[in-house]
Length: 113
Image (cartoon, rainbow, N blue to C red; front, side):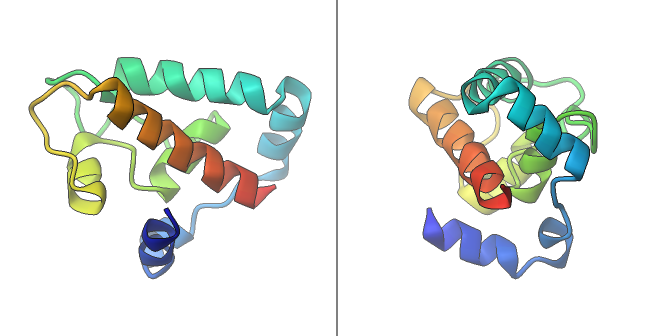
């Protein structure tokens, strides 16, 4: 995963995302296990389906630390997932792929803390 974080760091767009204090406070209040559960839920519902009617617009730019992390890690839509992580569009994400995405998100959040 170090390789993907090095690539993301070179992107001006991806590297501009940072957790705000309210996000850090939310994580502190809820705990990382709860944030991981939220990430699993968001990924399974918003990113894992083979066909996403609003692909490219399904992840808000704010409102939850996981959303910020998704944009920072290029796991926000299937287009970005293909471009940055080589996970093809048009097929449902396997559990292994979903775990990979969640692990990247959580690693980014932990680095922000």
